[in-house]
Length: 251
Ligand code: NAI
Image 1 (tube, helix red, strand yellow):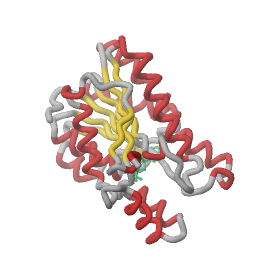
Image 2 (cartoon, helix red, strand yellow):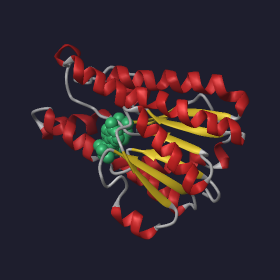
Image 3 (cartoon, protein in one colour):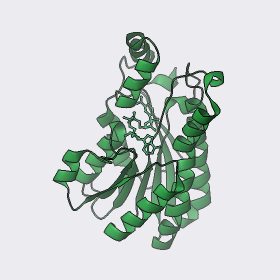
Image 4 (cartoon, rainbow, N blue to C red):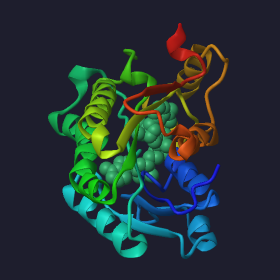
């Protein structure tokens, strides 16, 4: 898979799926801006290995200033933006009525409003350069109800719809937009959700058993799909909601 000449922005780059996407994109020859609220916005070993091809921005994607900043950094360092990966997300484990209003807003702003901010600042750049690609991380919770995902499920449903909206709005600008919806993936986010559930072992077993393939995914398996989607081989795919879920939503 070859991404030479392409420039990508990846949010949630410090951990889990996002960190793996950054690693695979860099190995495929892309230049990358990694964005995270974590001060180490991308894994230190990737920064050491790719000092010229990787830039980092520390910021909260729920705040517009962060989108302004990663757009500025990408253009200043690399001169263009081909791929915008909206991947940062949070997943508190609660029923709908148990969420505080502040928590609800934090989930919606991190998981959904961040995509609007990326559109607001990156779409004009892509329009001016003649095209580009948005990849937004959804979830099996985008299309199914799951216990204790009171705010997360609705937020991930909205990820699908903003993805489709962008695909239609910008198709004639040669800007594509797709949602990638993973099943359960073994990442720090999942480990935290398991801890918050009150019975981490039962939580993890239930999730593994729930996937027909008989296990949960590793981050690299998900990131490989983001790599394919970022390549020119995927150039006819837009407005798509792509499940990568071990059969979870086929049931
Ligand atoms: P993770 O917790 O390992 O990584 C998420 C990264 O996003 C972290 O580095 C975190 O600091 C960053 N982040 C969170 N909120 C932020 C904010 N407001 N501003 C900037 N950075 C922020 O999580 P994981 O599992 O890699 O999740 C990545 C995406 O995949 C999320 O959108 C998540 O909802 C989605 N997903 C995860 C699944 C799983 O089972 N782990 C399943 C389906 C979807």
